[in-house]
Length: 376
Image (tube, rainbow, N blue to C red; front, side, top):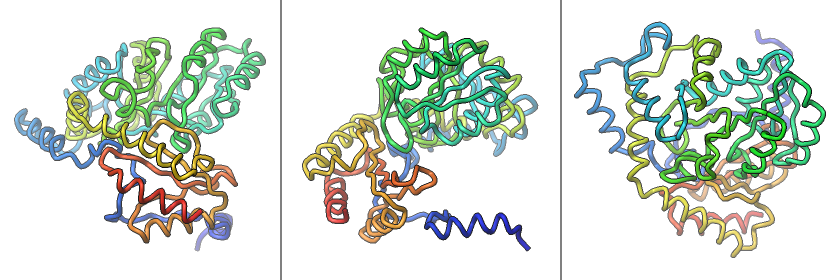
């Protein structure tokens, strides 16, 4: 037996061709993963992390418990100090994933009577954290600071105001005007929280992120950085003041009530950051982004694409059926490109999401965009 209401929801997804299914690993040319720098496949990072644990006689597969009980391995303090120094932050607190970090901060920091204002395209993990909060919440139009300002005028007498955005949006690849946003927050004494998941490793010196590229790190209440994208490993961190770290350790349930990351995971993050200081792949990735955009213009496809300077380049193709069919055509030709369907994105905004990597060749980029020109 299975509940009828749940079966109906599955049937509805199937009827509009949006039913999700787990895929399997393939050997197609990668234009879909978040492994922007190729770090997930780095033998150098893997070997250094492994050898480091052996040299330090760390023979432990799991963390054995939460950070507050038995799982706060000595490597955590090394990593969090490294993150604070690298990202010019007073403190860093490591979480098991970006989802956990966003759930943890948004569910615990805003209090009853406070207000959270969030971009309408904000990531699902932030929405879930907001839903768990006791604060009131309102969305503003995507990257529209005039709309945000109008809402701020209406709520400015409430207790505390938190504003949530991403420095690079995961389903669009675009960015807000962060300088103007910081100034707006100052005008209303609002606390700005920025998710940098898709900016770290791509923007800024040595991939420090878009906030640091703009020199805004000391004007942000909290930054969320993740290690599962360009860093090629797993986990996340919230960057902010020492007081914020103390508060999260005491009240963030997704931090408190979960088994910690393993020592090997922590060591892998450490050596991924070490690699950022010497790698040439950031430069190659940036060159590929510029080449991709130039090819879009050359093939006169720019009207289909959301303007983006990031690794995420999105081509709007309305309708689940059509965008899925084109994605399947790409896969048949050897390219791994994913269709992003409604309801993940709004109806009529379905898209092909091209993720660019340092290891994509210009020949591959030209080939995939030439095929796109034929398909649409």
